[in-house]
Length: 439
Image (tube, rainbow, N blue to C red; front, side, top):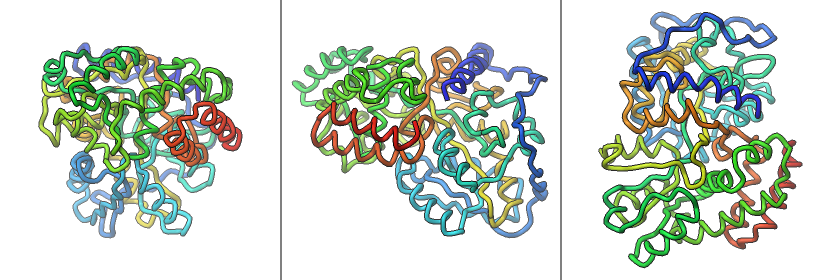
């Protein structure tokens, strides 16, 4: 994992070049090494695909739906006779969709294609269980080895194949705020958590929630940013490579800092969606929110706020110079009922046209190195620049760093910590969970 993330960091420098010129770079001739095992090439998609259905399974509902619809519109234009079934299951970060998907997959009723986070969520859950088709031939056919960063390909691949098509790159460690509100309250975006604590006392005196939080998974999301700030990128990577124990002094310290951060959040967090927590910031009921940059898509597309003036952002406190990333992707499950239609869908996802239609709406940057950044707003251009120069590390909360066994148990650890605030007990529980999960 650590080597893959380092490769991703080096190859992400393509993004920095894109910001400087706003044009797509010339395609490199040398492809990345292909996986060792050969697989039968997927059957070519009809042109247009005839009859039948295409069931797309994802958690992009509600405010995240328009970005998915942009991809579906392209697919329908290319495949007008296919009946597209947009099977979304609501719930941020896929918390509900993943449970439904598991039931269907284990019951022998897979969708034609489904959304899955790159990294251990894909590999540890579905590839190791032999539930996915190898897409290496499709990558070769479409020339994708030349346009997806090698490090990202490693996170969706193994020695025996490539298992999904990435559609974007999101940043997890972002703190959001409304510039006009901060000016009114006389506070600055905090660079460190100590800066935040100082500002938080002033905000509380004004009757403002310092940091908005939402339901369960958003606590996991906040924790990873706090832990990254507390222990640094090297130790963060060392957790997942097994070189640093979760119950080490560094691990305990991260939980202690997280407990202090939680004391400045809203007590009704478990009843809120991530959008509602963002609304607290927009409405002036809260000053800050730590959320992935799909929040930028929400504020731009749904709330019609302009990046830079209507809303502002910084790396979450203490994480400047680090880019905690995640990538959404779609795979081809074995037994896909309409396989040819699904392959045609994957071709849209991996295309430059699809990428540049989807990502500006979604609030993410392209997984391709040749995207046209003139189509992306000020926030996304800044994210692309940071991705090109920052240290890239993988998200826990969104499937890059840890497998499903760890993530399922971590939710219980988080619940325990929220109730007890016992940092040593949480760190010890994580260490036991890591051993159980094979970390």
